[in-house]
Image (tube, one colour):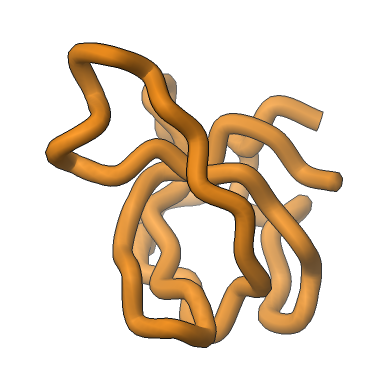
Amino acid sequence: MNGQSRKDIVPGIEVNIVLKQDQLTGKLTRGIVKDVLTKSSNHPHGIKVRLQDGQVGRVKEVL
């Protein structure tokens, strides 16, 4: 899954996100979702989440 649909993202799942500072390079960060921050049902750049370690970014892959 590509992480653009909010219904696919729930707390506790493992995802790869791109952090704000890594948007140009596309470097991915892996973690477990703590909070879903995007309110809309879809987002073309990925649903924004907070990981359990506090990092915030947009979901690129659901693992």
